[in-house]
Length: 157
Image (cartoon, rainbow, N blue to C red; front, side, top):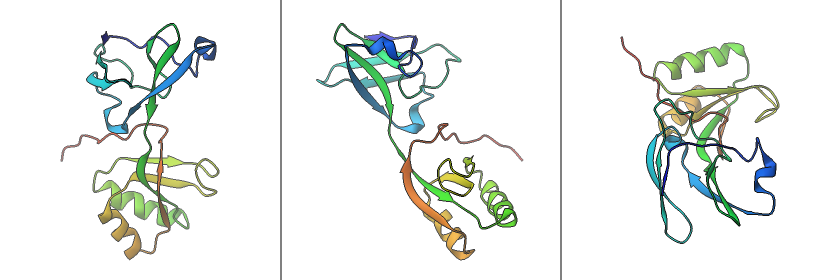
């Protein structure tokens, strides 16, 4: 079966799943924006995605397929990340500038969203760990589903 559009999300329309089993189909963060891909349903059946150009990225809870008794939805797998919590704005600027020069995609959270302090979130990389260690910057390695999928930014000099 080929899916060409995502019509609903169970978070937006929770009544859609009333009385049906919800089965999560796991996706890695890096494939959420791929328009064309194959996924395997439990039981081995393949489902093809061929979404229109410009289709929004897949979100947690997007309904891929609904049957009488079962709804198959997108489930995003946690990503291995570093949650960086600099001690002050000066250190945050230094870290953001230094990692930005490496063209690493980063996300930022406010106090209380992920940790009690504001933080910078990047995908795990051992060279970033070495940099943070060398500059005495506080961080934690963890797995989480980022609010927005990581994307490598294009650039030119």
